[in-house]
Length: 398
Image (cartoon, rainbow, N blue to C red; front, side):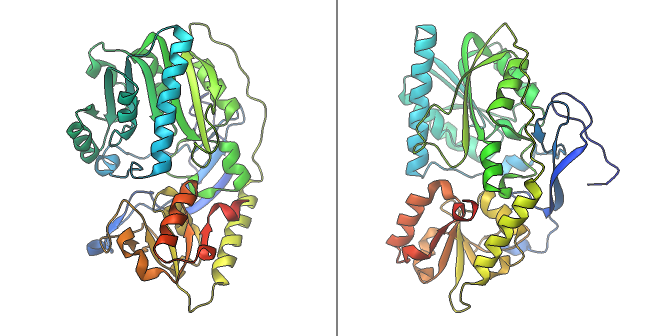
């Protein structure tokens, strides 16, 4: 970022002056590099996180053009037992909550960032008649259509109401999509337009308070534009025609890592809610300390014992990109990818498919996707790993 650049708040439009975090030369989390083109140029820029001095909302104010970036996106959690259980439970909860609120069952649902429509399949099992996904990835749209689920291949922008041709929904749902929007206010305004008067807006994002308490720098990404907690969620909902119904309605064992699950309803009355003045001025210091803790652990692994990672999502990519000793990793495994085809952005660690796990059974393994630690740990043990050498990334945050 040019030191002379200025940014305005995504919500109140006041100039942002208080920077609370800088991460130097970070990649895009899904910009994986083919082993055939490891010399190609990649996107590496500083990430600067600000907290607005006026409305106190924490944000990454710098935008990049993601219209083509997500077109080739192919990541899925549908293979995970934990993820499928969550999707089933949240679909069932939303159906029951809607029925209790409006004295009728919901009939239609639209999912923003629907991926391969695994979540929409769970809504279908809950007897929703109309299912529609909005998804920019051509590959994931093809998978959805093979499941006979309608999908619009598009980002979620102001063109969507016109594309729907007047169609409205009882439920609008998204998982880890809302906090990627360049204009979160526009997301809420568009959602309001495509929802019936009796409707529920539900979304899952990362909880800023949990991120800060863990010093979890890997979630401060180029792709993430806003970071919210319960207070700031209530504020932006109230300012854009929604009332908060409930936060985190599911049991902690069902939810993933640091989820903030929000259930809201349309409202014609707008409450003037003021966010409590909560500052994150010590965030940089805490994150630097946590990073050092991980680097020290890696340095203390005997040189004759290999080190691998598991989970090549945002947590894996961003953690590796920030460590000074990332070259200590031999490879990083993930259920979504095959071996010997891709390397991680910036750190250039090879990505391996789980079929090769037995070859690394004597290794230490840091599990970056710690929300799925139990099922990943079981998988590793089944492939000959010593459970004592399976380390959750969350262990360094505690």
